Length: 402
Image (cartoon, rainbow, N blue to C red; front, side, top):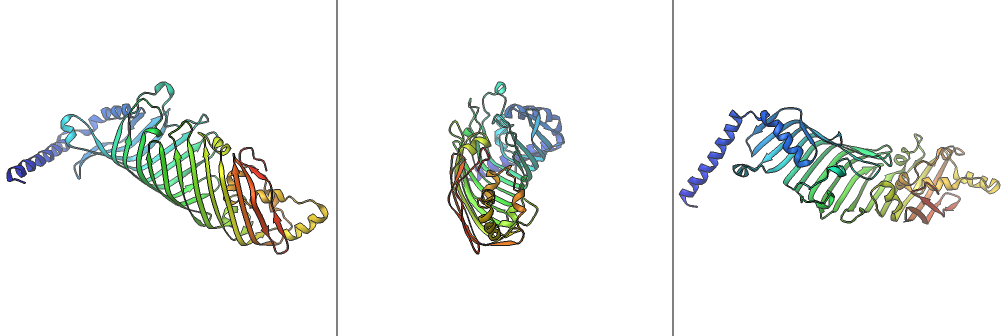
């Protein structure tokens, strides 16, 4: 590089630094806050408000800091953050163009709701839909965040806390299409320390995600649940008219006593088991996904203890009285973790009121084939010290029948 070229480049860099210093010393950034709110609101098609101060920093690039940021849609907060940091490229400013390269959210709270009609709270109303804004961001990050999800139709939901998200190469192609997912591409990594639902808690959730042309792959998905460490992968395909999902999951050596805590405060059973599932489904709501579920699920274990009921004694009484509700036992004991989705609303109270004593279950094998939301028993049996029991029949995910 010639000496004269070095002098020119050095002078240019010095000029940019002087401009940035001048901005800090002589420009009241907060005076531009209304214009920034209006520009952001117009670009997102949502209401953007900055409750706190707006600041400008220099290094490592031009950095705009916003305090107490709120993004609202349909009259409610969609995203709020204690602080948002925007990294702005300097050179485009000379052409009166604001190009944001990086966005960081500190202590954000993201609330996602799916309404009864299958639409989400981040979607625009039909009357307000227009062209999608184009986005090209090198990096989006989130630290110490909280994510809330609620499905208004099914009543299901979860709250994820202490989340960290890093998104790279976030692209949103603008246009007339109202479908956000079909126009979005990115690569990302997510980690959440804890996720709570009404029924159970998941710890240390982690996964990498890659999305393009409406197809999103999450793998590997790892988490701690029921005292075991599960792993799997998820593919979500939004490229068609109806979303398609494919889930593979394994949960080896989980504790059956931890699972039963979701159904009863009593210590119903003890021991470790292996669970796996390979399911595909489609639909815009949870109920639609249940109705279309296909695949298989398996649960296996050895040397388990069932507390509060002596099954061998119950079976001996059954020979004379012909009165034993084995169907209920099968519905809740054989299916394992997937039973939380299948057996909602069943009355298990009678199962815990057994004959007293304990039962040693030497072997349990439970293989199910799922077709259109109904799980049919393929190889389902357990062996106690004195008996071997085989279960036949099916469990209906959708209508709550067995």
